Amino acid sequence: MAANRRVTASLTALVACAAALAGCAESGNGVKEGAHGAKKGAGAPLKSPVRLIGDGSTAYTGKQPHLPRPERLKPGQKPPQFVVFSWDGAGEDSQKLFSHFRKVAKRNDATMTYFLSGVYMLPEKKRELYKPPRHLTGSSDIGFNDRRGIADTVEQLRGAWLEGNEIGTHFNGHFCGAGRGVGEWSVEDWKSEIKQAKSFVKSWKTNTGMKGAKPLPFDYDKELVGARTPCLEGQKNFMRAARELGFRYDTSGVNDQLWPKKKDGLWDLSMQLVPVPGRTFETLTMDYNFMVNQSGTTSQGDPSMHEYWGDQMRDGLLQGFDRAYKGNRAPLIIGNHFESWNGGTYMRAIEETIEKVCTKSEVRCVSFRQLADWLDAQDPKVLARLVKLPVGQAPKEGWARYLSAQPAPAPKGVPGAPAHKS
Image (tube, rainbow, N blue to C red; front, top):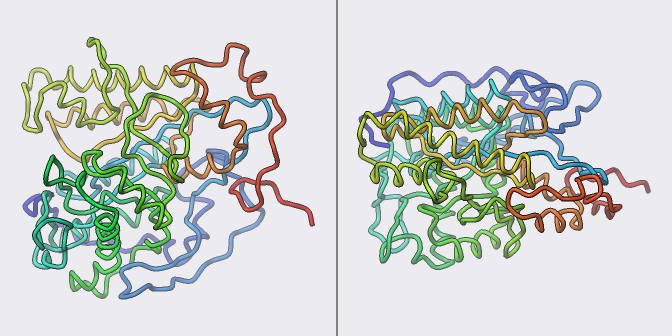
């Protein structure tokens, strides 16, 4: 995100409910009563005080608003169709795509995951604070930010979290490729990278000098539970580091449209393969991969093909959605970048996909964190049956019979578990 793309609009005030975030959980984003299986408690929620953390860049403000309570499937109940829209290297620049897709999500009863690049919270003049593993101090393949860009990104992160979206990480320098990329990193390298990504979020006020600005309304040490590695490289050692640091999921792999399983203690919420209409192969559910198969480069391709390429990506995602929705109901995992490759045609494709699928019955457009919460709440025996379903294939005997076995009681403390009587 180059500095010359920064907008000059001033940082807006923290949304009106920031000082009492829990009190905003019942209204303000247009989410319908009981949306996504949420259970509303009786009476108004208690207000929580803001407790600054460190230099005040972040703060504990209570439970995140608009997080639905996951519910365990009843015996024989068909699972909902989950769809996860996620963004690599999330930040706000002059294109204002972060703010735009927040509006798109709200209009369509969706929450998403924003994978923040830590260096987008670090000003160029402080680049020497970044010590990337196996690279020179202060180096980054995606550059750094400036004061204005950081202020705008903070504004979007704050609003996104208050709306129930997840703030994950895309780490820092985005180093890719044989011999120089994250695929060569050790477990200790990943731990260093994660620690630094957190530190840039937790100290953006000090690093920018904006000490009087409003804080981000979350404790990032607790908020950060998952990630996607740059270029989907280095997954094995990252997962080992992530497990030791308390992460809950990884989405750096490649898989077919199947139900997720745990891998080395983390939910494996991998990217997926979907059809490419008019072609004989499938590709990953990501704007970058469609682009590479179309124009072959991030530089602008043939303008006369832009509309066709966008339609091709949209229709491929919709074919993948229909295959799951009418078949095994495996969660559909979609990844994107806030980029205007090929005239912005992929941003149009994503927006049209959101509008088409998130409003359908039995569909939940959620963040990775919400999907992990739901998976944790399910009976392991039910999940074991779901993972056996092939791509696009619903149970031949019907959902009611396939999932009719009496599930085991939910373990105490698992999200969505019924209250235990003493």
